[in-house]
Length: 138
Image (cartoon, rainbow, N blue to C red; front, side):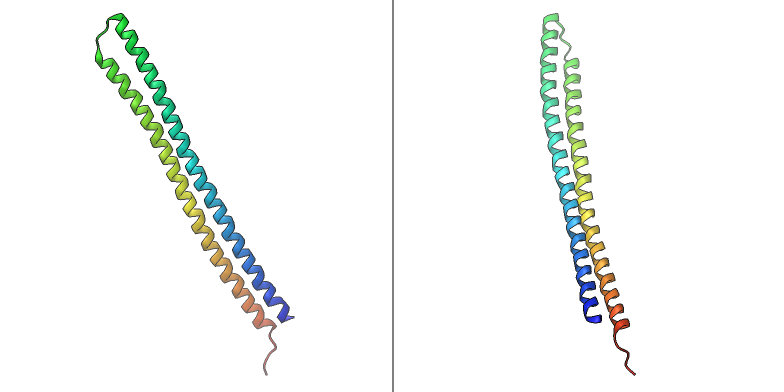
């Protein structure tokens, strides 16, 4: 009975450890992919916001020109507000991307730690079982 049980216990431990590592890798890759997508979406949103701002500033400049207004402070303030809005979108995308990158690294590290614990636990169980099942020497 001992000869059949111990290899099966060790094989089960090895499979469990490999599954844990693969699950951690898959989760890490999914989080890294989400980080890239988050950054790409922020970049696209920033570009769209900048295009809308240029259009709005052009319309505002044309309206001011037609009315004869010469106050450049309004244009400067509008330009500054548009730039701050675009930078805010970029920053938020970078922040979300960094958070997801960190979660990706943590997921990989946690899976490695769990796999190591499983390997040690399974090996210890097999060793203990082997000692209990071994014939007693008298």
